[in-house]
Image (cartoon, rainbow, N blue to C red):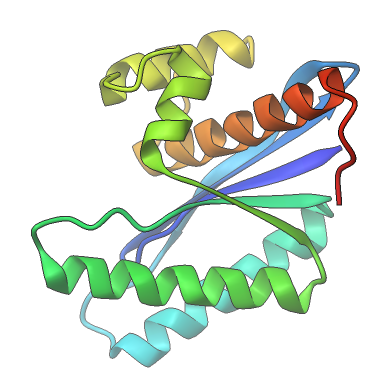
Length: 166
């Protein structure tokens, strides 16, 4: 099973592609989609959509796992991240992908076993879990890989419980 993890944002959207086979994980690809902050928001959202469609086409994921919106004190940031999430969900739906959404707390717990883990701890565990030589860069790509790992843990849990996946 191929899982595409997404850490949405309008300036930078992180993506990470992993393969989950025989309860083993392998990183296939990771990176970021970036947009110029000087562009109007509709153009930035189109860039995210178009680039994500290319990533979906090339990686052929079975699932897309996306971080749920975390309501921060900055309303403007929350709104723009929400717009990016909407574009990601549209691209996933258009590609007829299975979609899973996880809170930051769920991601931290799945990757580190600790809901208050720091970004550095999460990145270190991503490196360890995927058996990489270096922590994936940039940070948004490492976060996206963590989201994909979180989904693999949820799938593994369902398999152990013999539950059906959509």
